[in-house]
Length: 165
Image (cartoon, rainbow, N blue to C red; front, side, top):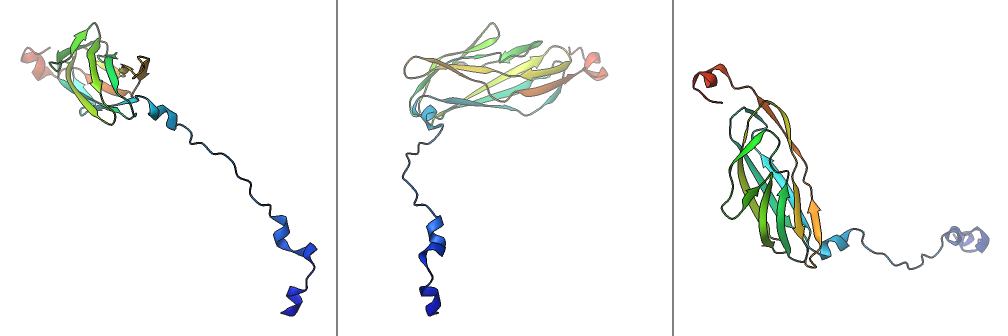
């Protein structure tokens, strides 16, 4: 045991380790939350429908930032060959977008928008809105949630006999 204590310092294994120096670390990506940061989630329960069938579409908007946002509009909310049947009373449809009328969305608050749309023809369609909003400095920002496909099939023979289109 005494031999271990008398080993020369040149063979010591601790000499190969350097002392760590202090560095300045900054979190990456957190600055986006210092301002308004609106995120959206699309919910469509039926991904496969028939021509003329109602499709319930929900958009959950959340402000993940530390400052309030003003919701301006949801562009491309209505896919081609669809018509809108129901819109919440506090909003309105203009052309093919939903006017959100500058609704204030405070930090960490949510807004749920429910729409009913109806397909007019068969095919594969993509619901891919773009949410436009203003941050606390009046700067335009946008968010595009993950798009959702909808498959629209022909109306069955029973629907044609009933006069549905």
